[in-house]
Image (cartoon, rainbow, N blue to C red; front, top):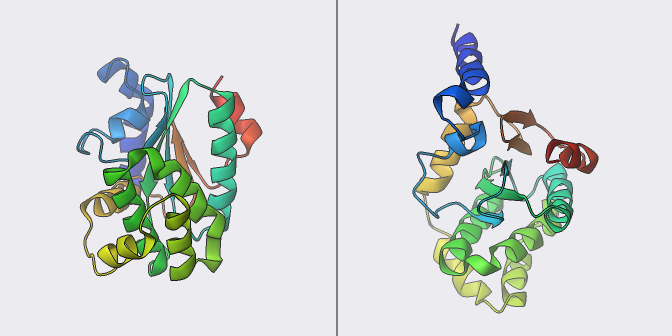
Amino acid sequence: MKHSFKHLVIFFYLFLGSMVFAEDNLASFLLKDYEANTLPMVGSKNADFTIIEFFDYRCGYCSKQADDFSELLVENKNIKIIYLEFPIFGGISEIASLIALKVWKQNPGLYFEVHNGFMNLGPSMKKKSLIEVLNNQGLDGKNIYDSVKGEKNNKIIIQNKALAKRLNLRGTPASIINDTIIPGYVKLSNLRNMTK
């Protein structure tokens, strides 16, 4: 019964959402409870295509998805990508997410480079490699790492996890492209077709 209710809610958003929420799409609607500018975003703010990605920095397919999103951003100026840190593997994944959110808050122009640098580390991520990625961007990597190490209950990560749960998303990567929810990796050719 609970599972059916989730599907009914998603059905409502997908098929009735455009009538209720005018020009907004599902992706934009799902972000309405977040405070402005708290979520990392790249691309055109006024884009016709909104992509939300749930990811973990140690997920191999997330790394592949990051490469595809980077290429898509170069090719298509009519998209924006909102990154939802979703560290399902815990441990150093959680630390990497906290660091990335701190970079977004303090140096938003460096977020995309740090994000992609962390993605390239993948499952072999270690404290030293995180610090190196930050240092390569002219940041004080050790200081940033140490400042987030003990942080618990980050509000944005809690919101991201709650949203993923409401959408019944359990793994990474997972994307929402305008009104379409896609669990798992999306090939670049499919991304191109969905954002024409």
